[in-house]
Amino acid sequence: MIGLKNLIEMICDEAIEGDGTLFQSDLVDKSGFDKVKVTRILDKLEGKGFIERKRRGMSNVVILKG
Image (cartoon, rainbow, N blue to C red; front, side):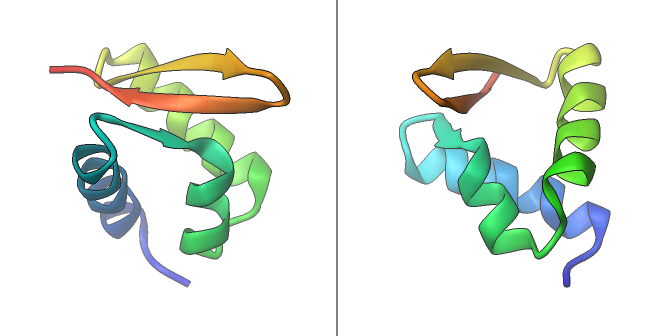
């Protein structure tokens, strides 16, 4: 399992590689954190304006702002 700092770095790296977007489910799979923990972390990042989440069908897409 990775730490919080590593998860934030992963979000940035993966989003940059994927044209600024990535699926929230991919973060869950790659991080080793459960869905709830990833959701809470993303809630905080979204509240601070670092990311935006949009619904795509059954999934959320995380968009890096900036």
